[in-house]
Length: 155
Image: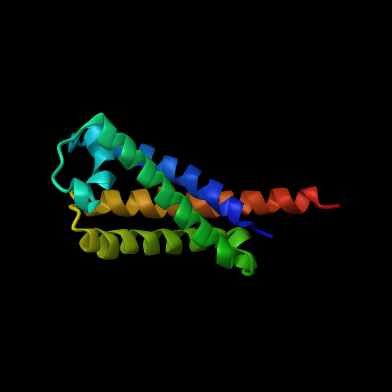
């Protein structure tokens, strides 16, 4: 059985994984933004901070918001994973992870960004790879590991 706490921790770890991917690609490789600017973007999506200049305080708030959203999406993933064995059995778990990552990408880019009035400056491929592979697949495989741990611990 997959617990909600498994989704919470899985979402946090997958969020860190995707954040590292985004930071490496957009900051170190493409030089599209600074590290503080990248992490400030989630906070700048909040109405009081629209157009606020980059600062480390804003970047800190952005990190917290990013990880909270990642954990929330992880909890949402764990709910159907309780009842659908294909979500925690290989190789179908990878397909679920790809699908869920694509769903999360769509929700963020086509729903959340327009609703909040935020700006998204990422190239399409970066957003898709970062969310689908480095969030969705990582989350699904962490859920699979959590389930295996639970079943091996029960007598």
